[in-house]
Image 1 (cartoon, rainbow, N blue to C red):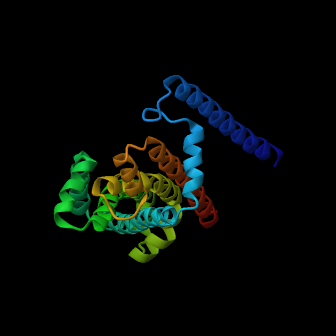
Image 2 (cartoon, rainbow, N blue to C red; image 1 turned 45 degrees about the horizontal axis):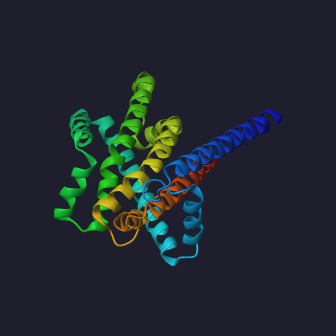
Image 3 (cartoon, one colour; image 1 turned 90 degrees about the vertical axis):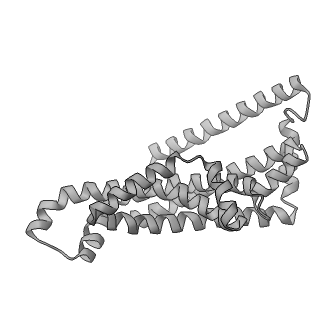
Length: 251
């Protein structure tokens, strides 16, 4: 217990040292440059961050970005798990998906946004772009884990055959917890980055990306940095909540 507390304290101290050092470096650099259009001071950015807390649009923007990220992660995860299970039983589908994912990963993110804006609404575009980038990552992690379990249990299942339902619920799911955890953690962080990028490029009505875009148009670098720092803090909190939730579920 003492070791874990000491380890946690050390981790907190390292973060404090890092943040303090970064702020000092930022302050010195901003003083040397002395131009708010190139690098505003940390005090100016922190002041804007605090002011945003008293603006209604701040909460609606954060809510929409979080909602889009959570929805894209949930849908991508469910589809990826179902498709991975089907692919495990069908070599043709797994081979087809392997080639499809290779193609999807070779397409630049910006191209997704541009193409989809011709076909769907801006709001729908953000969700589809997030799905197209999250699905391959989650699918490959889950599929590789299932494939590994399939190889380990192949001989046993040949001797004692089980139904698909029993095989999945009693063998595969309990044994692929680590793959599920790693997939959700990596996907949750990526969902915010991808989602906000799509919000900026797609110029949606509400969202953190929308606020960053408006600040950019006003040549307000301090506001851009303030929103970016808020985004980083939200991702940190969301990541911690995901880890805590997964720990409670899988322990």
